[in-house]
Length: 152
Image (cartoon, rainbow, N blue to C red; front, side, top):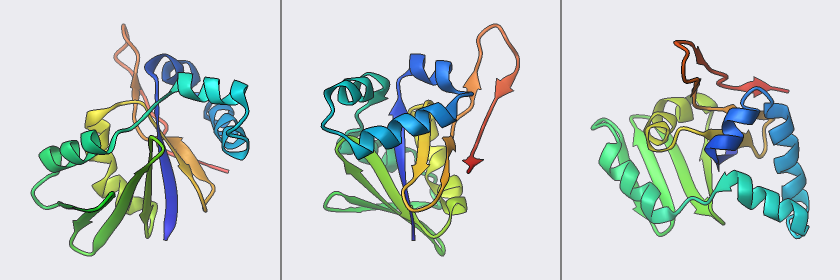
């Protein structure tokens, strides 16, 4: 199974770094490599929003379409539709998930959480995929800019 992490990026940072996802990715990797560095930790806490299990499970239960089943066992959330399945877990304020392929997340998970919080950055743990899963809508503009995934 492929493993990914979803970071809830603060609005100001998301708008500034939307087209600089490679810089954000490098920072996240550096922080993960050295989480005890106080400078990296303070930057990480400034740019990210900590995800809470209760708010996620409540949101998934309330907004999942009827053809999608949401079931939790302990701190693990199972999201299923027919033969598609995703395992979601909140760890240290970060939303981690496992799926067979990214298309499952695009079909099952992303539409539900995108409505909950719009500034989401996904990074593969064991795959090189990363990028924004939400469009950034610029005020005073009719254009929607969207980068779904960047591949290295």
